[in-house]
Length: 439
Ligand SMILES: Cc1ncc(COP(=O)(O)O)c(C=O)c1O
Image (cartoon, rainbow, N blue to C red; front, side, top):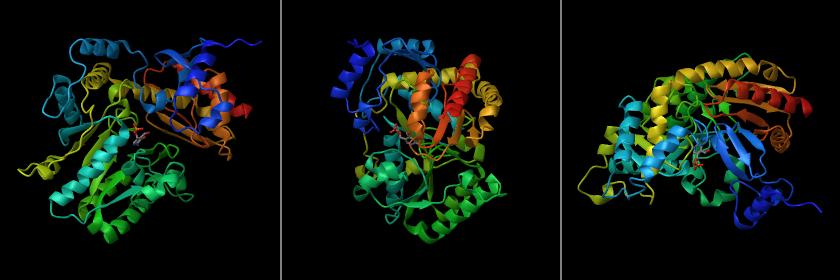
């Protein structure tokens, strides 16, 4: 008789007690859950002692490794001081310092940090603030939002209304507000011979036509700058954002930069929108903000937008809240994360890692089964085959080779923690090549 391992025991209990996210639970009849006991650096260790290289940074949140000693130390100190206090009517040092430092990271162009917990709550905040700004400014008819084809901004109802991923959206369509989608500048859709920049400009012209017709009822354009993650790591030229900024300004439409995934160095600059030389009207941040430790999200905006809410009338204020808004532990983890950026020259060091991984991946990129190999900063992606179910095979083959990959349809991607070592980079690329060859 086969004996149950600690992993088996925990996964059985989990399947009985936990409804796992983004999952058809029945699939776990044939695809075992992995029960993680501990983690360190880029490695996750399961309850049976097997290890997995976290090549997706645990859903794109981890930056400086699991159990990072510096973030741990900051959190332990914070735990002994203040774990949480409500942010309405109260404040505390970690939330003030974090807000000041995030504003400085935008060159002082944005500030007035409004906190939520997960990414989707930041999207909700930005959409509501944009609409409310126009209402406070005597333009209540500006109630519509525009997003890019294939966009993903989260799964609460407001965020899902501006998300364009059929798998997540279609079931709930009757509950959602209608929003408009304009063509994505994803360079894979360019005509043969057309550059990524030319294609981006062509897509910007489509945005211009849309806003020309609909600006009077449009509050904001929301975009994932440079990389549309959840639709399959679609990458585009920064010139799209430069043009989008000009077009939004011309038509009096807000630009919301959803940098929930792209922020904190992921695309090679601290914020992705810097590569377009623009400032958005709203900046949504989450995921890497705490180094992957605790849920925290924030929306930054311009002084002029903040001022439109500042009034004697209570209802002109932004009466939105979440219980854990500005949680002190999460803010302290975020401060420790910013400290690491500052003291370790992370953006420069990542450039070296990007070049190294691109060098290692040359054979993978050229493999006959691999299409559209692409890279932006610390994100790599490519397509394998046409079978939408290939992702599961690759996921399982990767686990057998001590790698955590979680393909999106036919898109395989790497989004490793920034602390990935030379040996780990080599292992990741070599074992992925081995998987591609084995298919
Ligand atoms: C660009 C973007 N926006 C919003 C979200 C939603 O964030 P959360 O899952 O924390 O609600 C995500 C999550 O992947 C994202 O990638």
